[in-house]
Image 1 (cartoon, one colour):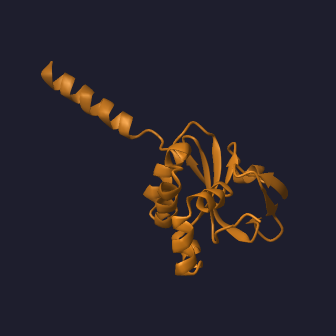
Image 2 (cartoon, rainbow, N blue to C red):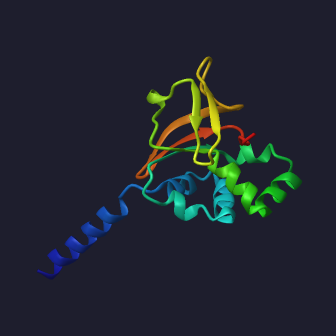
Image 3 (spheres, helix red, strand yellow):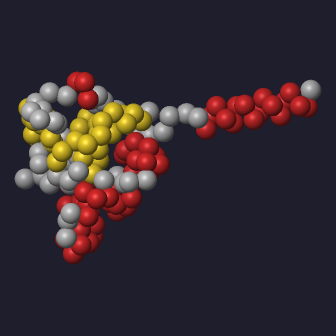
Length: 151
């Protein structure tokens, strides 16, 4: 009986840890979004993107953030209002999978519109989508090669 109880507890523990992860945890686990994770923390957006959603996030990689001059990036990370505007410009309400993407204007959580083009690959403003459909339990991540800035 004791062995059965231990096996049941171990099985339940494995099942619970195998659950899907939210957008933040999914991005952190991917390993190529350290700067994005830092920025989300600095802007106070971690809890939002761990929330119910669903969200579609166009996530810039660490290499995308590296394209921003260090002094400019440091200044952005210290300006919570501007940082929040930039980060929420990368987020669209709802769960939009790659197969559902259409060219046109898309309203962001920030309030402005992103321009999506599909000729020769998907672009979001001036950023190229380099990987799609990283599914999280509260949305989806599409990886982009540049940080997009609201106008």
